[in-house]
Length: 285
Image 1 (cartoon, rainbow, N blue to C red):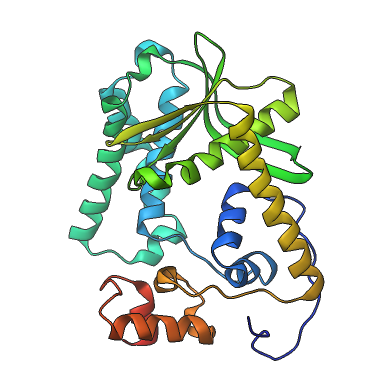
Image 2: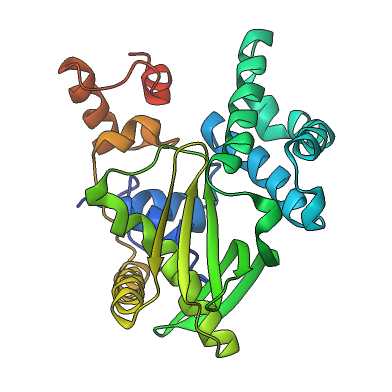
C-alpha cells in the first residue's frame, strides 16, 4: 500500500450508508472506492452496465403490470417506450456508438429482457413489489439497497434480483448470492419478516436460487461488517489500499494510479489483457 498521489494523508468521513455495490467496489479496490465515493470523481457505467439499466427498467415496468399483461409483446412495447430515456441519457451518449454498435446494444438489451421467459413465466409470479428501496442497520452497518423484485411464494417472501451479465462459475455462486442475502437481512431488520428464498436471475442463462438460512445470512452480513470495519480504519487514517489486478483494465482512474498503470502495462506485455479493456485506450497501449 502506498500513500495518496500527493504524498499526504487525511481522514475521510464515513458514508451515511453502505450499499452492496459500494461494498463490492471497496472489497475489490479501496482506492477506487475512495475516488468514487469520497473524491466524487466520475465513474461512468460502461456499455454492459447500461444494457443492465435498460433491461431492468423494462422488467420493472412489466412486473408492475397485471399478471395477464406480462407478455413478450407487452415487454417489446415497453422497451420501445423506455428507449428514448436511455438513448438521450448522458451516460449512453458518452459511449458515442456508431449506428451498427447501437443496433447491437439494443439487441443485447432485448435478448436480456426476452431471456426472462427462459427462466420463468412472469404472468405466474405473485409480485409484491418492484424496485423496493431498503434502509436498515445490518450487522451494525448502515445499509441501503434496492431490490429488483419481492415475490410472494407458497412458503413466504422471495427476494429476486436480475442480472444481465454472465452467470458465475459454480465456485463463485456463493459470492454472487451474498448481495441478495444482504437484501434478505435488511428486509428482516426493517420489517421483522424473514424472506424464505433468494434468487438471482441471469437473464437468458440460468436461475440461481438458495433457501434463506441463518448460516447464509451470517456469512453475508459478516462479510459486510468486516468490510465496514476496514473502511472505518481507512477513513480514519486516510490510507486506502490499491489492489492491482485484471479489473485495472476497466478502472476509470487508471491514468492517475501508478500501481494500476503498471499492472495494465504488465498484463498487456504478457498478453493477459483483453483488447477491449478501456485502460488500453486511456494509456495509449
